[in-house]
Length: 250
Image (spheres, rainbow, N blue to C red):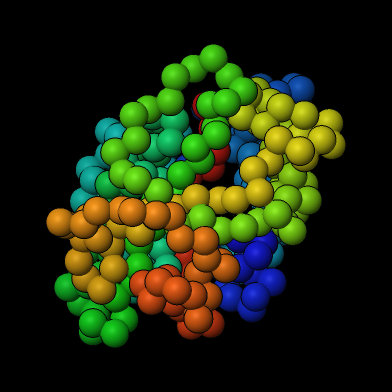
């Protein structure tokens, strides 16, 4: 996000919950409402490090997305899409990266919303939908990663932006358990564990599923999905870009 922002793009981050059922880290927080306020404060500080243009908070119950009517969640996402008309959408893969039910539910809702958006939009306005992948998330912890269902198709070199990413992660002090598990040392100022690349899968483009009868032979290295890259499906203009992530919580 920091790289894309520096290139002049608008980035809109949508979070579905405030993570109020999570741990509170070193803080003496006594209720979920107080934790929600604190988590949103941390998130606001983190995205400031990354140059995010605007933050949209859905504030659904933490841990409850899987129990929601998925059409309601998808419709909320659709209305956000219709208001911003993004060209690039990034969300969780179907395994939620960590297997978290909220992440999985949001992934399904976003894909459903994209298809509904296409039904109302002109072909030239169809967005590209990507899944984000964190292949090294489990390198430093004992849990087993979910089995990946889709191959990585693109990676972005963020080596110049590791400092911004590290500082953003440092804002999540109430989530020190999760940060220390996936990025040990970052909270203490050691950013060497941050991978110099971020990884994505193009799942839908030009109104069609990108994995219909397609084999992946190599991973493209792209410059933050800007114009002029080798893969035309990764080309975008300087218009609003939206990322769909739930507030990071375990």
